[in-house]
Length: 171
Image 1 (cartoon, one colour):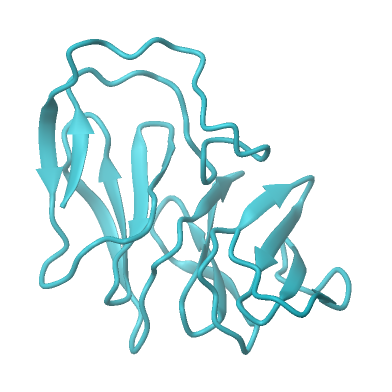
Image 2 (cartoon, rainbow, N blue to C red; image 1 turned 135 degrees about the vertical axis):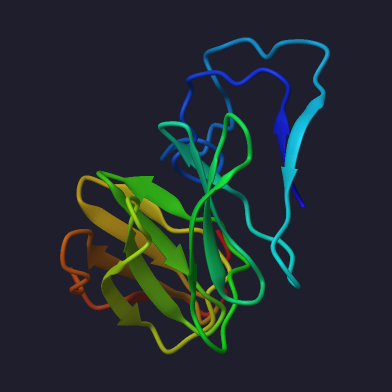
């Protein structure tokens, strides 16, 4: 289940750990005491990924291949988009009206924040367990194969051949 805090602030959390530097910090103080204001459950599934939050909408994929958009204020579903024979175990990134998400089968997807419709897809042909990062129009993808992919955020085309090390890249 996905839970919300009792008092919603205007701060966005578009990338894993909040920002492209992965600081994990917010500028606003959290209201205390924290309490659960609402819950949202994925039907016949669950969540392992970290959510992204932008402009009052929570974006998160479930382990059975459905991507969800939920209102932060009250936990009501905005939209869902189902992808067959896959699942989302890594967080997503949100930038410029697009969601960048990866699945454990190696697919990178760019979805519209408005309705979840696919903008582009790129198959890395390797397992992906790390959230993407977006910086200056480039989507960075760390792969279990030790490859670092760089994709154009608008088109999904490779910016360069993947950089590779002999160890898995998980963040």
